[in-house]
Image 1 (cartoon, helix red, strand yellow):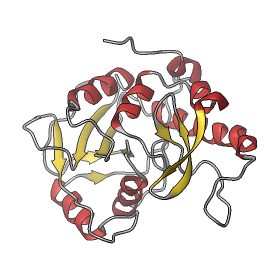
Image 2 (cartoon, one colour):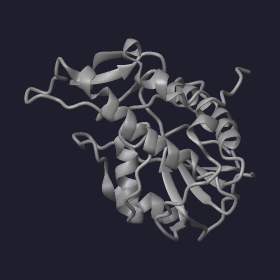
Image 3 (cartoon, one colour):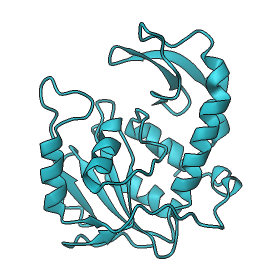
Length: 234
């Protein structure tokens, strides 16, 4: 399905964060007043990991114990999937000192179950009459040579039925035509939520509206369908 043309006062049924951090999901929910959650909301997802997972959304690989390691990021203990290069930052409980508990492996089934439900909702948004805002913010781990067209192409493959508008935050501006670019710098000393006023100003300038907090899921989208449908390497 074609990507939406960038016009004022467009209306969408969902706003979905594609990372890189929870700042994106938090501000989308706050500004557009919705509660629906999606898989990339609370992970730390470099763009290479995002592309790899969207190309091969295999939940078994995501939670395979041999792919998971305790890792430090931003001074916090976290669980990182080495295969995809994604931190499952809020999937496992931390102790009072901020460290991941030694028996974190016991939490894998519950974390896997939660993510399976979120992935079903994410891929299930591939509906003929669905209009989606897909929002991606740059991370410090992103390759400077990243081509936004790579993300557009993999999303076109996964969301053949839906119409989506892409928004890139803090990436180099370019005349993409099919996407919008925003600059929302991180204020010195700002916490994980970022600068609310900058988010509000930029999102208001886009002129997009969310018509509802859509929770519809395609009846034809089963886990087997998307999990086993790997995009061949180019």
